[in-house]
Structures are given as structure tokens and as C-alpha cells.
Length: 210
Image (cartoon, rainbow, N blue to C red; front, side, top):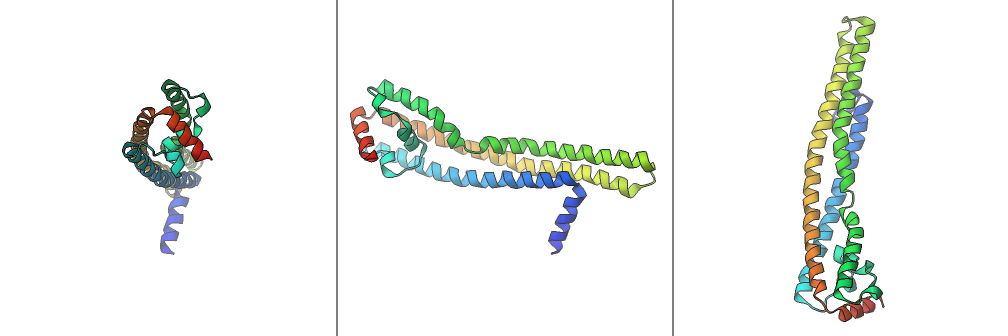
């Protein structure tokens, strides 16, 4: 109960902007956790598919219920148009561009929120100093308590925005590196598929759909 009281006291000292920073921080951390869990699953599936493609010439990710990027790529490929390895490479490149944003997920949103947090802190600084100048305009320097409230709001929002933004930016960097690893593994798997027999691939894909 004491912790709750201190939390509410801190939030009220920071003014309305503190609550905005808090909610933005909650959204950012929820997205970070979601992307970390989703990325872990994708990387696990992608590595599994890559190693199976290397060791088993008959393995096809889409036929084994995989959700890796290469399985999504095979599912999106328009196989009736594939008559040669050049056609297959073209189809893979076209659909890889569609799949990549889905693989990246909410990374762009996390980056925007990480950029937004210090700006919200700066906005809190401006509003806090406006409150200080309003007190000075109305009462001069004879109301130190009210002036302190405005200064406190300015400092708290700035510090809060920076304190939260720094770990979000760092975590975004880690998630981006994991996506790069995932896409590198996907490109390796694609190279293995490009060396497969096209007729066998189309038959396996037809059998998977059937």
C-alpha cells in the first residue's frame, strides 16, 4: 500500500505528462516482450528448417507445419509460374519483400515509441516551466512552494522519459540483431532450395497442399 501511495505521489508530481509517459512505456515494454517471444520462436523454426534442408533433400518446411520465414515464402510462391530456377529465384525475391515486414513485426513501432519518450519528457519540462513562470507572474517570488511544484514536474518528466527510453532503445537494438540473424538464416535456406530440383519441389508443394 505504501508503494502504491509513493507511485501515485510521484505520478501526480510529474503532472499529466507523467501519465502519458507511463502508458507509452507500458506499451513499449509489452511490444518488446512480445517481439522477444515471437522472434525466439521464428529463429528456432528457421534454424530447424535450415539444418533439415541441409541434411534431407526431401524435406520441405511447408509440408511439416513450420511457421519459419522460408515456410511462409514457399506458401506465398505462385508455383504455376515457376518453370526454371530463374523463375523460382524471381518469385522468392518478390515474396521475400512481402514477408520481411511481417518478420520484423513491431520493431518500427518500438523505435518510434523509444524516440517519443524523451520528447514527452521535454514536453513535461516545458509545461513545468510554464507553470513556474505563471506563478512568478501572479505572485512574484513569494510562492516558493508553487514554484517548486513546477520545477519538480519539469525535472521528473525529463528524467522519466530518458530513464525509460534508454533501455527501450537498447532492447530494440538487440531485437533488430536477432531479426538480422533470422533473415540471414532464411537466405541460407533459400539458397539450398534454389539448388533443389524444381519438379520435385512443385510435387512436394502440391502434396503438402493436398
